[in-house]
Length: 173
Ligand code: ADP
Image 1 (cartoon, rainbow, N blue to C red):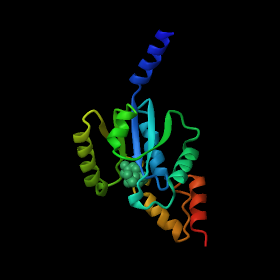
Image 2 (tube, protein in one colour):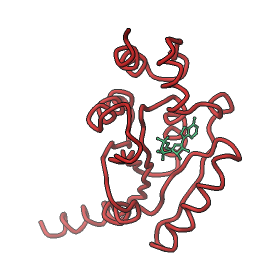
Image 3 (cartoon, rainbow, N blue to C red):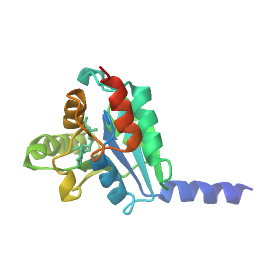
């Protein structure tokens, strides 16, 4: 019995796990593209939704989590979680060796570079890895999608079906 437990613990500890943090307000096809790439590199990806009250999200934490669950329902080795506080502390608690971030354009670079180096300073054991999405998603952001939906535009090319529906309801006139 003890051996089985030790074996299970070993498996758990040797799993290569990465955290993909963000607001996901709401999840877009760009996020899903990054997750698709990250899951090929790690045993498990934890998509971590930040409480992030500073940003005054359109969708509540519960709504953002539910939309992610729906979008990732049939995908192996991806788990959805929530966190508040320091990202690196969450990563250590989850025994993750890396943080995944998406890089769309040069405009993302400065902020991401600063964050990555600060996180390294705070916790040297967690490496930040940047992944670039498919070209067609490089101009896609949750902010833009919300703006289009707010103005009555069609967002179905940019987000999963349930997200388009949820946006439609939020901005129903
Ligand atoms: P944040 O609140 O941290 O900006 P987001 O939910 O907007 O969180 O994004 C989470 C991560 O996904 C960030 O690293 C962001 O750069 C990346 N990301 C967002 N949209 C895209 C996209 N279209 N392509 C690639 N990466 C993206």
